[in-house]
Image (cartoon, rainbow, N blue to C red; front, side, top):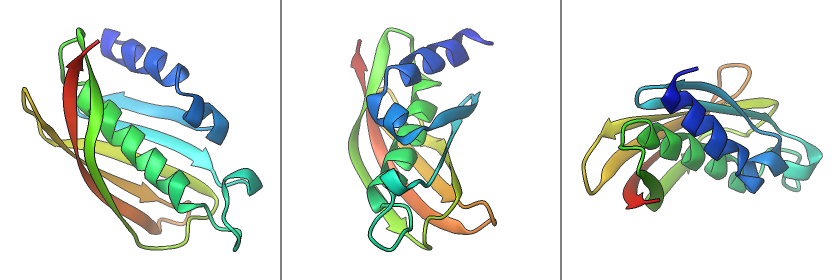
Length: 134
């Protein structure tokens, strides 16, 4: 495991929300991170589909960790702005892939897509991460 992947894995292990969802870190690369989890009764809404909060959280975390892969280890990132379009019901195993659109010293533009097990495009998101000293 690379030092960057170890750093992301260590940080991910501290995320109570991701633990609550049963999410797992599937891939860490330069500017790209994938996080997956299953929709469960605990993460569903009243119709049995994954709650929008689940989809949003997966996309936000994947995009934030993608940003973290490209910055100095003395920094973390925080979300400054994040918007999501929900495109299809969230069912089964969801995979959120976050990626860096444009890295910067003060702002990092990110995007994420959340896909369902049948290839359905569940959500797409755009956001801005801000590097902060850890």
